[in-house]
Length: 297
Image (tube, rainbow, N blue to C red; front, side, top):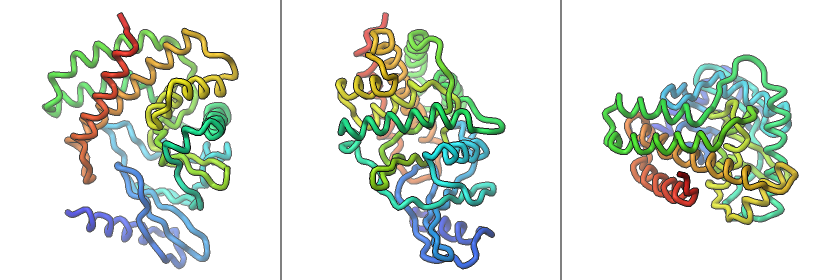
């Protein structure tokens, strides 16, 4: 099946949903390497259909995504959910542009994002209902390790060393506060609508430490050390202690390892056309550099 045909089928599937009355102007939106997003107009209103099944090997369960989206909307940080069925989620379309790395690196924007994450972690945590998944990165790393062994992955020779490093990182991170986190803070998932920020793509949402969202944002937006300090000081409203800085950097490092191993697994399981092998190499290099800088004993 070619990539073009896959996109055509995604549009067809989106248009077949029973939610519509007079759908038109269906088009594929960019972003996402685990799902398709289709923009559709219906009776003068514009929506986005997210198409994607459960991805068990990555802990993506659509019931959990639905609950997170609803809580995030109630907290004022995500578009409303209008319809859901197995494999399809319909939300309001936000006429906004995704942020770039350069935009996130602006101190004023970074302060706005810190406030946005505060609303997620504080307000959406109180508003989510029903069963919700945990997203503990060190459990995920252990699970990916077993999955890669079962898949007879080419990466098996690396796993023992990577898990030893993960164990050291987990010890430094220590005890955490559990809140609802987005867990996938790519610049493309942060939308700017004339100064109002929105978060989209909640498929990896779950109960986690705020440090994971903060560290993930920093790596995905290539934040300098000074900007990372600004992010933490704005978020926690206090100067950054040496202990917090070490715990944060250990979680940030773990997020890079998780992205690397996510890609290792995807090399063998994903049906999406994407160069996972190169993505794995890039993220492993970033992880190894970050781990070396920690100088853990």
